[in-house]
Amino acid sequence: MQKRRKSPPKYPQKPQKKSHTKSGEKEEGYGKGRYDRDNTNERSFNDYKGGKQNHQGRSASKGRGKPPNDTRSSLPRITSDDQITEGKYRGRHILLSESPKMAPTCRKLRETLFRILYRRVRAHRFLDICAGTGTVGIEAISRGALLATMVERKAKNCSLIRKNLTALEISEGHGEIVESEAIPFLKQMSKRRRFWDVVFFSPPFDYDYDEALACFGRGFSIKPGGVFVIEHHAEMFFPERIGVLKRWKVVVEEEDERAISFYDRDK
Image (cartoon, rainbow, N blue to C red; front, side):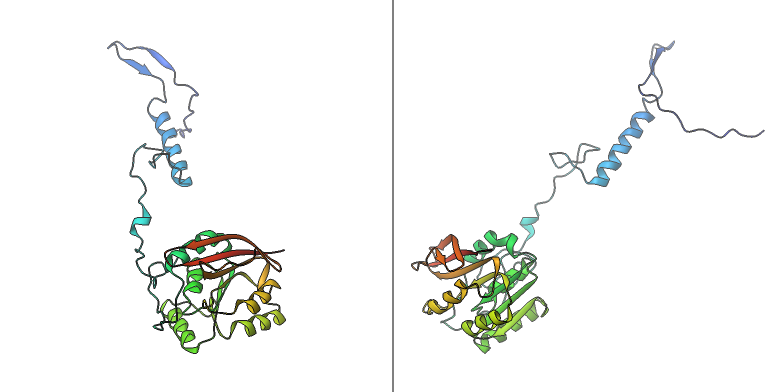
């Protein structure tokens, strides 16, 4: 005898109730067991595939589970100025200059700087002039900058930057070192028509700012629509308008007596 091929079951739209049995138990139509179970499995699969969870962080299919772990608690603690404060290299220590004349940008100011400019640094080009040992430029790379160009006039500091990049395994395509004075570099880049999305300028406090600001005011090295940031002593003030640059924010770190002023270049 040839066996009949079983056809797939047809699910009713609504379970059909049957009359009471002789034993007095109430029977349900097809679907009380498998119909509901199949729907539950389908919902579970869709929720799993889409990664959906309810507002309590529990699985939508079972209604229970553990809340997601707090990843911030597992990150390295930042306790000193020689540590990268955020991003890919968070917590990693870098070499700093032992010279008493060298004062790297403090970590609190770095955190504030990149908290404000995070979206304008990630996947963009960053220029650090008077880079010292490259702390700020490396912070930019750690936060996803495509390229950080670090300009420093002292050969010894350039050597420290190179050691820091090597220790962190940052390739030359992401970390560029230029040994040069600030003004000649800016004039050369103007001739070459080379621009960066964010330019950070952190000279010594006894620096003569006039010539450098004249170059920046003409848009040297700053991409149209880009950002120029200058680090200075907390008691120093700069004009609201410098050529093509317009100031939009000033942040003061009173503990370290330092400040950073933010300017946008006209488009």
